[in-house]
Figure 1 (cartoon, rainbow over the protein chains, first blue to last red):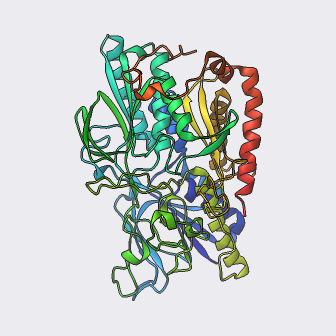
Figure 2: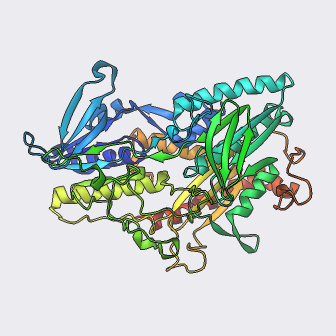
Length: 485
Length: 59
């Protein structure tokens, strides 16, 4: 009997666990270690954050799902990997610390035959002074944060109803953030709600971003066919900003936040301040902070993870200038080069470099988006990794049998721009491939037949359908495997 | 339905300010973005286009 241990129960981890148990059946063990008791469909946190959806509508408890599926669920956080075992334990194992109330603080070691690191990001609010819900800005990264943000927004709306003017600052809270798309969605949903509440004329909205140009989204922007032209996403997003009356500040590194005041540096080296009454700024991501130790107990964290805490896999991590980057640098199998029974999926793997061009101010401050790993690629990677492991268990394959390079897959995203069955809008987008490949597509790096963007009510319906569909899939209800990642 | 924002003025709309240059949708475009019949057709088309992307990504 083989044992797969999966760290994390987000999109990647839960996908891995679901398929692992389905494909392996009762003969083998699947253990999921996650500090959270609920699965959160994160894309819908945006709607929670503007008060358009209750937080309980974006989560579902994990234990009943895993009990039904026969997956062993441990509500705990992983703290360290011992991929070589130690003098006492011959098998590789992971140290965990329980977070469920009944066993809070209890430590345990869980041996494994295969490990999937799907721990996702640490929300690194600490990277910017004053950033975060414990300080001076709001967040929609978790459903709890989003609920608190919605409550604060309600207070702002009441003030505007009373005649007060309010300034809103939405965007990225550090020069190397990813997830601009989420902040972008929040901005336009906020604007939509303010109009619905009849207070839009009392609000000044500002977008603050580390992108070089609007529409970069951490993927270097998107080219699409539009109105007889090949347009860049910069044009489409600036159009949306102008249409909705939003002021934008680009190429910005948020250095510090005080109550009601954000300090940021731009790529030209100049210092700026922006006053606000309400701010939602996305934090930069890092790895969750796992350590790794060899058989003797020596710290090998730096060999297993990159300095940001993301797990090194089969990517080409050679430092090269932007002009020498290649789509071939990106990992395919997500297998650790040091330990063939360890894989990383989703945000947990270390990308070889960004997709957007790296930029630095004259002061040496890096100001450019780090690469996103959105839901679709994360789930696709997790499924491929799981398939490789299952082939190894069932058929004795010695090399990973499945690949899922982000340079060979596309991503479809729907960025909400306002919620409502008849008045909502969203931007439905797809890019292929995710990582631009200038060898296959010399001019724009992507297939223009498969890359598109469209704004309208239909895209809002799609986002709502995805919300219902992926929570249905997460609950492993009848036919869940028919829903593509 | 929420009132349109094209009447909202900001500090960046003066000549040669940032909002002076981007294209802005006309009322016709805004109408078709919310027209239920047209958007029902777009719903089918966008899903079809997305499925093409999804299928290319599976190995």
